[in-house]
Image 1 (cartoon, rainbow, N blue to C red):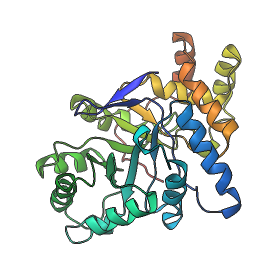
Image 2 (image 1 turned 90 degrees about the vertical axis):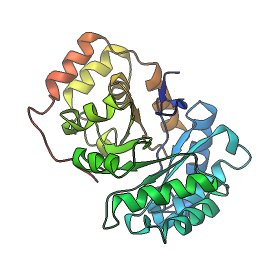
Image 3 (image 1 turned 120 degrees about the vertical axis):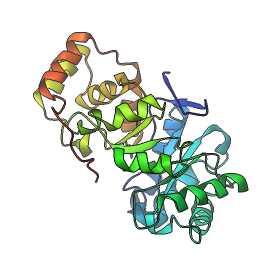
Length: 276
């Protein structure tokens, strides 16, 4: 399987598993747990979650899914911006660890920027690394100017920036993604199929028909052609996670990519980073 490298040299599969909106309905919990376990079995060992998702219930779902197999999973969670202070970040992290049933995170992210100074968040993250609660840290939803400020505040060891990026949200390609690529910081792409909204587009249907694939698989495969991009789609059923995993093996041709680029052109200028 194709892999993505973090700045410290750690590698993970180039396709992960997202958990946004998991844990919201008890009747769906068994299927969500089964889907995450199937994904792990298929090699999708990076799982992304957050304290925000279903008020912590998504973390509990992940915790159940990884019971007995924690060492085979690269576990990512995210902190609310109001918890990213020197006073509150450790407590927030420890609460996430309890819900996840583990003693450490492989990657801990600032979910989006709030009122806490970035320099304070950097120091608080580094304290968690020193305490052994997290292996590395990163950010989410930070634009280029934010990343510049983060680096100036001592955040040069930032492991990733998780952003909204897909065929219809190509604004980051203008300046943010080149900035990250120069520093070998990978992008974690959330909502990689725009929560299903882009899947009726004729260009995706056209490319999918050439490969006996689904439009979602094409959208994911396109993201995986981008250097340093790691999509994290959510799949709440075994069938869906198998469909996502098959996208890893879908090889798009130059003609396929040209069809998609024509239908979903990159912006001609800078756009502010979008987020959901």
